[in-house]
Structures are given as structure tokens and as C-alpha cells.
Amino acid sequence: MLVLGVSGSLRRDSYNAALLRHAGDLFEGEGAQFEIYDGLREIPPYDEDYDTEDAPEAVSRLREAVRDADAVFFVTPEYNSSIPGALKNALDWISRPFASNPLRYKPVAVIGASSGMFGAVWAQAELRKILGAIGARVTEGEVAVGNAGERFDQNDRLNEPNLEQEVHEVVARLLSDAEAAKTSQREAA
Amino acid sequence: MSSVDTQVLPSGTWQVDEIHSSVGFAVDYMAGTFHGTFGDFDAAVTDGVLKGSAKVASVQVKDENLAAHLQSPDFFDAQAHPELSFTCTAISRDGDRLTIDGEITIKGHTEVAKITGEISDPIADSYGGERFGLTLQTVVERDKFGVSWNNPLPSGEPALSNEVTITAELQLAKVGEGEC
Image (cartoon, rainbow over all chains, first blue to last red; front, side, top):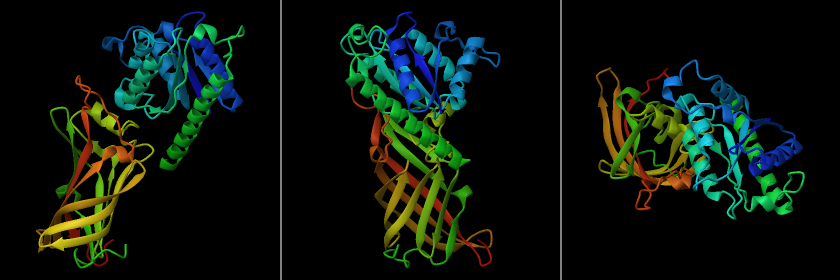
């Protein structure tokens, strides 16, 4: 089982990137292979004129990474009550052509962190809506890591067992959904 | 199945003529009613018992992206649940009017349903066979089947109704001996 991890934050010392790494350890603890996608900064602004068979290389790499994964795990910060533009831009590239895009039927889960007290809950809801519209299989569950500046130890690990448990539950649920999707694909074949 | 009154529908085996039949749905969306159909479906009456199914991947609407969205987990989830189906459990007739109790399965959820409709008696058709007609309709609450997508209007009201009307206009041709 291969899980692709995507953080919506580009910041070098991002809390969301730390949260993603912590989640990655939990995936690996469950026996899954976990890869972090780190090319978000290289994705150009979506432009239909360039969305051809010869798409930009960074976009092709992203689409291929999503296609190869059995599931995709997103962590997102929140800007102006929504997701970061870079993440939305990447999703716009992935989603075309719509009927055959690599996120279609792909099991996905969303959690988030923010330096404010609400833990990016609106961004998470927004991202789930977008992923559903793209055709992904959105796993239920939300983890809101609020006041993120106080929620990680010196090793960038979540310092609250309850939060780690919440992340673990979403991780387990996503793996379960991905396994069910693989089973139904096999039965359909 | 024992409660089905086999006298109501013609005896023998009758198979849907897909070309001259249609299966679809209608749902209120914003200021009007949105319609869709399924291109690939099946229906048969065998010894008075009606069964039917439709392939989710064959949903037909006027926009290919909307068709793709309807097949996604937001709506029917064609990958995990490729078919909708219906089975009749009881049927009664008053003149041409039919009342059918049955079970409808959508997205893996099965719910009881009451279907109303009309039946036309068998006639000799243009192809040397016999056929009769059924016009059926039922209203389902889609959230009971896990189809709960919505989008709020500026007023805050949901854009898409929870009640969906499913319709089937069927011509069923008699299957002769030696056919299957």
C-alpha cells in the first residue's frame, strides 16, 4: 500500500510539513509505504493553453505520483478561510481531463494545522469539498491542530497524545478505505 | 417473493426492449427540475415478478464533466457500486393502475419503496411477437442511500433537493420457448 503525502504549505519550517512527517511515521507503523510529494513550489499557474499532451514536466510528475499511489493524504494550512492557492492550483492541474483524472476514485484524507486556535477547520472542509468535486473517495475524519506553534516538540513531533491518536484514527481509516477500494477494483476486473 | 401476486403481470418471461424503453431520474435543482437517464439498463418479468437494474457508468446528462461527477463517490460511486437495482416484492392492480412494493438498491444501500404506475395489456407487436408496457414512478430520499452531496444557494438553502423521482417507461417483449 503506497500513500502519497501532500502538504499545502511551502514554508521551510511549516507546522503542516511537520504534521505530515508525523503522520507518515504512523502510516509506516501500519505497514504502508509513505512518500512525501515535495514539488508543489514547481507547479506553474494553471493555464489551459499549456494543459496539452505535452504538459509541464512538474505537472506530469505530480499526476504520475498521484496515479501511482493507492491513497493520498493531505495536510493543509488555512488562508482567508480557505486552502492555499498553491495547493488549489495543483489540484486544478490534477483534475484535468476531469473524467480520467488520477484523483478519480482515489481514497484521500485531509487534516490540518494552523497557528490560530481553530486548526484550519474551514480549509479542511473546503479541501474535502474540492476533492469530492474532483471525484476522489474522501475519507471521513478531521484533525484540527490549532495553536500549532505550541503543539510540536523539539523534534517536530506532536506533543499531545490525544492529537496523535486523532491523526492515527484518520490514518487507519484511510488505509481501510484504500484496501476496500483495491478489493472492489479487483472484483470489478 | 411469495407475496407477489403473479396474476397481475402477464405470465411467462418478458424481457425489456431497451431501444424503446427508458429509465431516468428527475430532481429539483435551483429554480427547476434536472433530468438524467441511464443508457444501459435491464428489466424483466418472470412468472409475474419484476426485476430491474441500471449501470451507473451509463448515466447520461448534457455535460460530460457532470456525468463524471455523478459517477464519483460524491454521488453514485460507480467504481464501488456499479449498478442500481430494483426487485418487486408485492404488486396490486386496479384497472390499468399498478401499485408495487419493492426494494431499491443504490450505492449499496437497500430501501423499501412504493412504486406507482400503469400497465398496458399484451399486444401483438410489429416483429411477430407479443409485448406489454409498464410506466413506473417512485420518489426516493437520496440521503438514505448515502447520496448526500449538496451546494448551498446564496440564501443558505440547499441547491439540490433530497427527493428524487425515478421513472421507468418499459416495453417488455415475450421471450419465446428456446430463447433465454
